[in-house]
Image 1 (cartoon, helix red, strand yellow):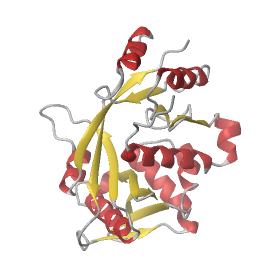
Image 2 (tube, rainbow, N blue to C red):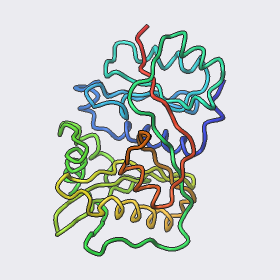
Image 3 (cartoon, one colour):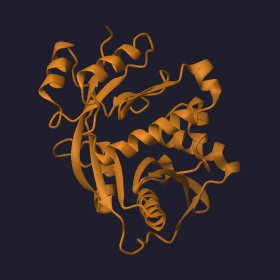
Image 4 (cartoon, rainbow, N blue to C red):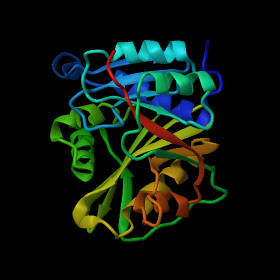
Amino acid sequence: MTSHNVPLEERVEIKAFLDLFRSAPRSLITDAALAYLSIEDGCAVSLPFAPPIGLNRILGLRDVASLERAVRWFDGRGGAPRLQIDDNTASADVLRWIADRGMTRSGPSWVKLTCPALASPMPWNDAIEVRAAEAGEASLFAELMCDGFGFPRSLAPFWAGIVCKPDWTCLIAYLDNLPAGTGIMYAADGYAWFGGGTTIPTFRNRGVQTALIRARMNLGTKQGVKVFAVETAEPEPGKYSVSFENVVKAGFRQVYVRHNYLIKPH
């Protein structure tokens, strides 16, 4: 059974992550147990030492047989992987399988949002310069991203692998002529996925992410992107979420919510 009901805004994310893992240096395969698996229209990705949840998860699978195969693939890999799924569109069989396996929600749910291509370019604060990372800036881009998210620097080679790669756009924002933040765009089949949006702590609350979001939308529209997609943590009731509000202000609207279920070993 195939997962034909995987929405297009999720399929571009799956393509992005499979390509991201394929682009990783071999040292991460041999030294850090990096692995990935394409299953039907979805995937499973594993980089055990990376912080959860993004690089250790199952995504895009909608039937029990495929989910069971993915869960067994994770046996012994470590990394506390999660299954990401929208309960509102999951079948009764899948929801029963999740319950029977004793899986429980872990961490905040993720909101998927989309936005159509722009009718005209979007401006941002003139004090912020945004430009694409060049091949010689791959390490700078990757280290900035790790520092912004609080990831270990040992993850930098993973992100450096996509700089200047076809279908990828890796942007660096500069404020006061200093590198201040990063943003990633992967484009395929008229859709684009945004990721890697982070700001160095000393530059936060100065419009860096707004500039990076708008720069990607401007570039993507020029490249023929019809729909932009992004995901972020679901805001807690009554609490302000900067990441969520930044994309909403840029015109993104919520499509669905994916819950994160902790995968229990067999």
